Figure (spheres, rainbow, N blue to C red):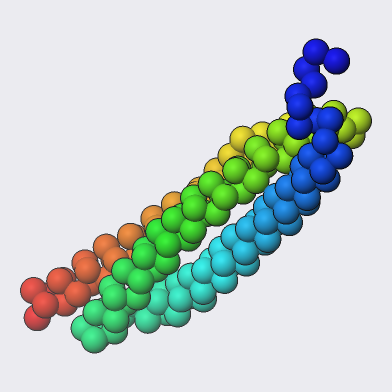
Length: 158
């Protein structure tokens, strides 16, 4: 065969490729699971904090200062989630490329990673994750502006 390489004649080569494929698949699954668990915890925490903060917005200066601090933490949490998503996506994309390469080199009749990649498209999950984080950042920005307005109007109106 013209596209045969010296390594492809070695029986260990095939085994090594299969082991690399299994490793990449497991690493990708672990990275994806970790990403969504972290995101779910952050989004749940932000939703809970947002509920408490919206109840706490009042004319009390102490409460408004606390609301502003919590809003800053909320913005930080959304930014952290974006950074985690970006880093884990890099790991996942690397593992996906390994799996695609191995499927091609082994001439696998069924290529699961090719099917998954075509079905999802590039960046599908990341896009929706970023949108949700942008919504949280926007909500926290509005909370900060409302709290700041109430705090300043309470100081200057008195």
